[in-house]
Image (cartoon, rainbow, N blue to C red):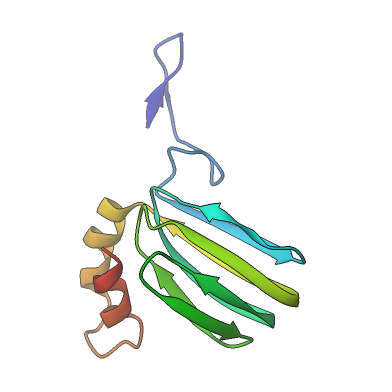
Length: 116
C-alpha cells in the first residue's frame, strides 16, 4: 500500500512496481539482454525455443519448459525464430512468505527455493 498526496491509502495495481507479483506475456523474435530484475522470475515457455545465458550458466529452453531465475541475475536471451513466454515476476520477500504454503513435493518448490 502507498499513500496519495491527500493521505489516502491506495492498493497498487497488478502492473505497479509496488505489486509483489507481476505477469508478462511476451513473444521475442530478436536477442535480448542484458536483462536483470529485482524480482525472482518464473518463465513458462509456451512456444518456440531459445538459448538463455547468465554469467554462470546456459540453458536451452523450448515449449513446455519452466525456467526459474534468481533476483538480480543478469541474463541474455537468444530466440531461434521466436520464443513465446509468460513470466511471473515475484518479489523475493513475498515469494519466501508464500512458498511455505506449497507442498514440499510440488515440482517447483525446489527450484523456487534456489531462486531466493
